[in-house]
Length: 274
Image (cartoon, helix red, strand yellow):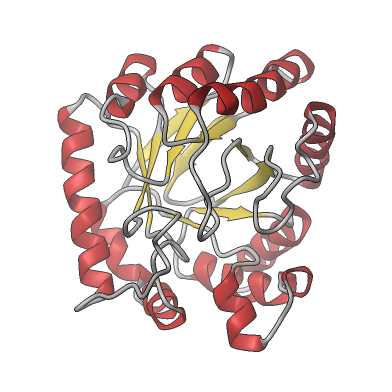
């Protein structure tokens, strides 16, 4: 159905990949502050690679509900030193830069990152698609309602799966018109959705296959899990792994997660048990 290469990784419809999360931020919801220091972020990245991560997603701006935007200068200062150090240690490492700012993406790609992960699908910065096209970089197009500051203020949909699907169709069309062919889609679990919205999207994930692009899902430790089972962030990995297992069995192509070791086991189990 689809197949393209990113450095040493092949993204196709048959072999799922695990994307490990590295937040170079003081305030991300799960591990804000732990990897804010460049060396800590680099060391954590290499631990995720050792655990089996295929892709590392590095972000310098928290997108948790209620978070504020930071300047592109601050985001560059957080992210780029990490990418530079990692490229010296492991030049073949596949890095995704988690940003909505075209300048941050451009500098990151120039320093060795390979993928753009834009939670706004190019809506927050109109130059993002031209940067992706310039570098022939795959771009992750995600659905978000409003922005991180306001997205969880009573989000409403007539039909959440239809609306998210139509949003992604439109952004894919614009991206392709901009010269981008390497596209990954993400329905944006937790980004402007209630608990019920999130579960509806997960239940209807098959519908997103009709877009004929790789599907990425990120449920790791998110608040809808905490609200469903009354769990603190540190207690959500087991439920996360269950959902990730179901998503892989439903044909999702990339799992974005904090606990890479668990996700690798999930991937192996899914390959062994039909």
